[in-house]
Length: 476
Length: 95
Image 1 (cartoon, each protein chain N blue to C red):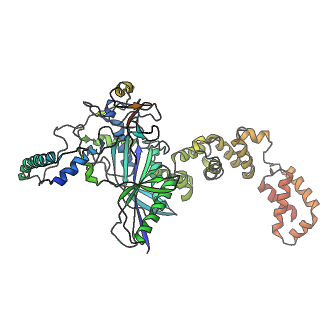
Image 2: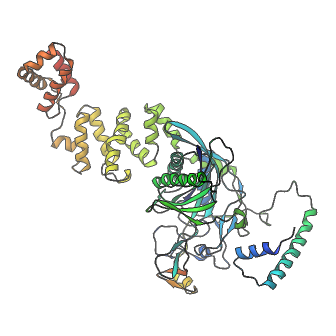
Image 3: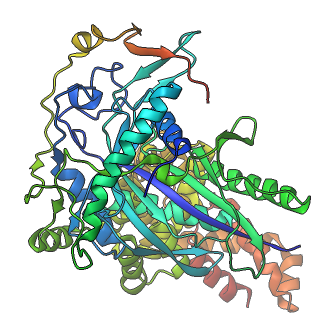
């Protein structure tokens, strides 16, 4: 039977505030255990949560960036469950009236564009961290993370493949960084994805029973975990079994998912409005001012790269896929406005390849944007050829200096002196009579042989255009 | 609306309460009496009324995003049943 995969994602983005969502304790990562868990975070008796204005502003920013309806009156609820890293016995979250309502985001997979619905996004507090391997008979609890503001972004079940799910997650990941509401660090858990995966016979409208995949901390694992789950469900259904609604943990080392616990029915969380928190009201003025302050969004940037810089759709898409990549490219443009396409080629080509090879992020590149800009400018003004530039780039990567310094010290300047090139061309023609004959009898391809000889004689420094012209006129 | 003993057992489990048979009977009766009292509200026409999230006619005041808390973990951990390595310790939870 042919099956259709249906995927919805729940993304938890940690909002990059200094203090927690309901307390004035620090949110800084990696500090001494429990040194940043205050009385409010611990849920001690008599404390009162007070909402952080920045958490609200950042949530609104996200809503506006995905064209969502902002609920100008929204409410905090208690989600009740017991777990050691949740000291109060409930998580403060939003159920019936979340801050961000329906929105949408566009994704592109294999050159096909589709719109994925954002069902809602709500504010909530993070739980603490349980450490199971520190003591034999105990679970150790660090509550520094408890109370860190999260924006839970829930998608519609609009994705039909692991690839689409990854494209959507990457889009959201780029967006939250563009608008500066989340640092996007997946290793530190600032950006976490849970995937709801189900399958149904192709053409059937009713959704199949879903499993929720948790513990996925990279896009690569997201794709693998979903594909693995789809296979598991197909095997079950094709053998006449039934998929159980449950939460499954993805184990990246063993590359398998395992059942975590039968997910409690939603109403078992016994949500009710938190009496400690009053309804939040967002004024029209605040909405207008946040909207005015929104930076250029990835879609807008992409459109500008195409219309103003003349880049093609693909290049513009890649360059805007990450804020850091777009920032790098734009710094290069400052001194290279006319060489936009050349800049794009270098960022997506040589630079990206070297970064991949050394497993570096673009922020860690030994060749910074301004340095690469200088190199591209030297290609643009014919000081060096594109081929020589690759050698210069390698030297720059190795820390041998700036483009200009390396071109100077290694004597790589392109030969544009017609007289000097002419002398070399004459010599080559004189020494290679048989090839000259072949050219004259109509073998155009042999021209490449002469170009090669001339480049060899000049260590690749002859201006290719000039060389070609000279060769043609001399040979004819 | 009334609650069965099975439902009360389930609610007790979710709240991590263990009830003896007598307590289960007493609690079921008490809860049903309370529900009966609340049911009187059903007589009121509420179609055009927005559910109230809070009894106060006020909106939430917001706090500036400033860190003012200091590290009081030693004080807090002094009242914890068990601690170690700066962590709160609880019986092993296996997932």
